[in-house]
Amino acid sequence: PPFPGASNTPQRRGVEPPPGRPPGHPGCPVWGSVRGLWWGVGPCGGPPWGMGLSGAVHEDLGRCGAGWGPRGVCRAPSPRRGPRAARGSAFQNKLVDRCERLQLQSAAIARHVDEVLPAKDQGVLVSPSNAARELVIQRLIFVGNACENEEQRLLERVHTEEERAHQSILTQRVHWTEALQKLAALRTYLVDMITNLDDQDLVSTLQLIFETEVAEGILEPQESLKLNFNQTCVQSPLLHRLWASAVLCCSQEIHIDEKTISPHLSLLEDKKTLTFSPKKAKVDLDCPERFDHWPNALATAAFHSGVCTWKISVEKSCAYKLGVCYSSLPRKGSGNEARLGFNAASWVFSRYDKEFRFLHAGHPQAVELIKSPAEIGVLVDFAGGEVLFYDPDSGTILFSHRETFQEPLYPVFAVAHQSISLTVLPTVGDLQLPPGH
Image 1: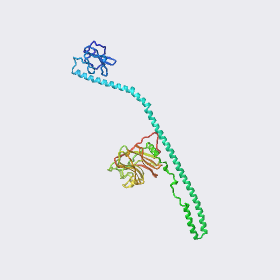
Image 2: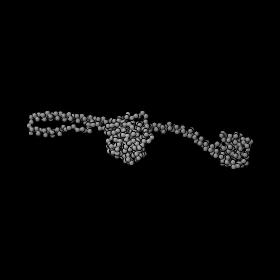
Image 3: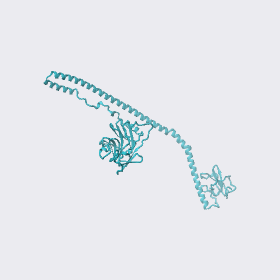
Image 4: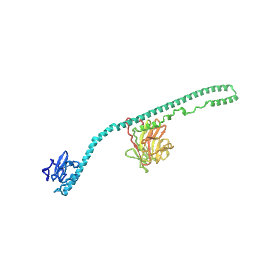
């Protein structure tokens, strides 16, 4: 027999269960296997019962004469069934449940691998990926067409403005050439009068000559804006935003000069985060580069050409200033000469609570914003004479100011609430800024 108490004459030929596997049918001691199906013969000698690995009873194998209960367990009485056997039967039932769950899980995984994933793969290759490529291509084509149209429009405006200025200069040249001829004729006439007329005749004649000069426009030349090329003809919101967005994608390292940091500020270990403290730190206030009152700090290097840009995370602070300044900006004292935006040596974007402003030379200009930016990009075109403040998240130009810069510019920072941090810009392809240092 396969194990003690088993029948020596099973109705169907079987094999012994796997080693260590307890009989799952206490009343049916004989086990057999047909294509992975375990079955046994009841003690009554009746037809065999069968159970698959999933725990389901197969009716085509029949059941023992005593009948079977839940989970295919034979109801025939077992003389050796006691508390321990009952516990074993419960444990066996749990194992059967576990086997069933494993089989269902295996079937689901197999179906996912054999059916779902190939379908998904085919779908990705055929539809969504192609649609994504098409979307990228269509949008880039649209942007390219918009840029070409804007280029054509702006170049036409430049040509028109160039022609207008040139024509104004030619008109002025003709006018003043004629004026010179008239003045030469008048001068000759005056010399003749001085030679040939008496004093009374001279007085009346000179009055007539002066009136003639005024009537004919023979006056002193005056500076006229019409003779200059108007740079505003190339202003384009579309070009401005695209240019700012492209430049801010370039990587450029800005380092904070620790020697300039105010005692109200501290630089964290990352060397990029400035944190404000109302209490002054114990630092060397005699250092000539250090701001001793206002919570300011400068970058280590200045730039005097090209384009320079950097981004600052400001989401934690409600009081800060960002911008550029000359190295001649005073560092000592509480006066406006060392206060960012209140002198002619600094240009900054400022926030105080919910108020945003651009500050230069003590003349604030309000900046109306719907929401507070989490990051601000600062872009300086030294040759073009422009400092620009940009919100990278929304692609919005917060403020733009034009200035002819006379000295090298330092990135400058101030914070009076919590902290601000320099953001490392990612490098995009081979796009590089013109040399700025």
